[in-house]
Length: 266
Length: 284
Ligand SMILES: Nc1ncnc2c1ncn2[C@@H]1O[C@H](COP(=O)(O)OP(=O)(O)O)[C@@H](O)[C@H]1O
Ligand SMILES: [Mg+2]
Image (cartoon, rainbow over all chains, first blue to last red; front, side):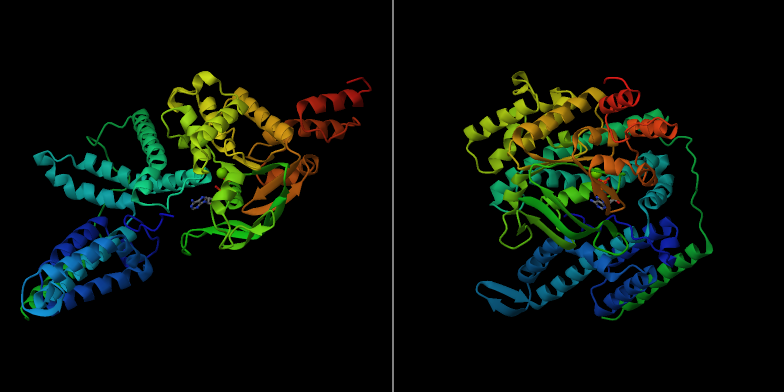
């Protein structure tokens, strides 16, 4: 029922993108997401689109998987577009009742929508091509230098990996509890808003209890295996950059250069 | 009057990469009042099959009929069906959510549209049937022991007064005493109320004692469907599927191999004792 959420889901495959070091993918995604907010002209958009298309092509992930991520934010996207359309002041082009749509409004709306969609595409692509374990390994290494200013890199990464690990478990649990309550005649679909919200109690209470139970079991299991934080902890497979990763950094740099060039065309 | 499945197939996951075929071409019919056991290794598709029976999952292919009506027809009342085919999930105590036992058991009947008084009456009956004392009615489900919590959860389904009661591994994680008590009470329900019972288990011993018919699942297929002694006679095939016949079956077969003319059909310890005594020429 609720298995459609792609964010944080891994798509197993053997592509160049899958093989990249997670650090490259994290930095690449970060750079890309920031770059999306730098341009306001079609040339910049073209460069960003081409780069995204290139990465998606490399990843061998079916497009349908990448599109799924957008479905989750569709409502948010629509609201953003509508607000931008009607509320950005400027040269009016269309008048519906008391509302005006301006040329600037259309421009802003289109660009905002594209940015949001690309943002989701880009980050979905990262999670689809990187296993959660790799992702947190990468993050831990990237945060390591911040230890000097007392950022607990290992703990943050550990919490993240546990959280990620719990997402599918909790989804499965939700599915199971929903079915079990449906078997007792509960109805999660019909009825007005109040009835729907009230109907959630039989779902949420068991879900919370189960989340706490699992968390405490896990904590106990970790303690039983002498886990005591990141200090002095080594890795079985430490991350190492390869030639492919260096090339990938080169490609990201190339993208930034092209984008800067594109920004000059207005 | 029956529950009938016709050439049912089902896959989890909507994409090739994640697809797991959980059920493959299953046809079977369960008549009212039957006591059926379903056995199979973990992952053989038992739970999925049970969810087909009360329309919690829609089959990919094939049909489900309840009293001859297609349950996936557009105008079929599936909510009504779920009250007539009561499904108790594995670890049902994890689904308790009310602040006291009685209200939790009332949840099902209330969803059927019964008045609070009627719901309470049914809840009390159901709790009595599974052997939960009145002193517990106002307690929080979390104050109870594991076995009692499970009874409360089973009562939650019984209170809807189903025609068929499906129990998915009702004894998982219980101690032998709790297991025997719960199974004993279910068997009693079957005898006294004529309720059809489908008991899912991966333990032959559990099933052997009570059921009159066994379905064996293996890798999503229904491989055997018959009375217990027919099924247990195939110890070797069962072993290949990671299942075991009851221990007494092995003992009786062993005795016969050694030359004792003993009847190998019994499936419970008591029956086996009598059979051995008879074979030795003594009065049971
Ligand atoms: N919610 C689910 N999502 C995906 N796969 C599932 C789900 N539930 C069960 N499966 C898979 O379907 C198969 C049958 O599972 P199940 O019906 O639970 O078997 P059993 O109850 O006999 O242990 C297994 O391979 C299992 O991994
Ligand atoms: Mg199961």
